[in-house]
Length: 282
Image (cartoon, rainbow, N blue to C red; front, side, top):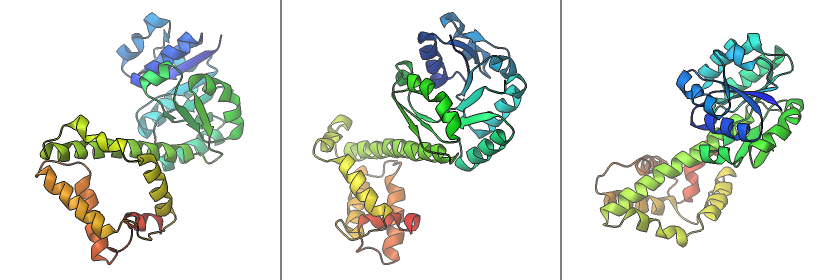
């Protein structure tokens, strides 16, 4: 039976703990809010009084925390209980530059640290679905790869660059957050035209959104702004969207309109809509 520790037992962390207990792992937990950790005792987890106690005897320590400051604080607290061969697997979504500095500092000090953010929700975690990304020392990844493969359906090693998984995580979450904001604007615009939210999703049956993202995304990344949908025409369409929303609060479209206006004023109206990424990729 493998002894592991989870520090951070919010929605995702507690789901990971439940799955680990189901797999037969011996799990110790600690959380800054004690009640969240105590709730897992009934499932078989051992609740520790502090981080240093929580990690004693653990083969792996999984961090599922909120941000960089909390990660640094918790690692400082657990160091005294950490065995030399224990590997810290950090699932926290963190700032890339701070992640790189943390990984370099800890590994140089002999702490075996690997950043492994995830694209996994609580329901997926309970079923060992979703994706775990890892970046950092290859030897550490090789040591924990079998365990990660029991934790998720897909495990992607991105190489030795310690902050690359952090970058990918933020890019992925930007897609998710941007899509949510855009959907809210679509629903608002549709409501302004007397169309229900579910009905407003109907165009997804006619559009190949994935192909559009991939195709235009590659053109944008390559700085190819040869027009197939001129920016000025796209801006006209955004004007129609804003008018149809009838002054209601919008999350995404006003910012897009402002960016388009700036580019058109600079003389890029005849370029493809992809030119909206001009400053990002040049």
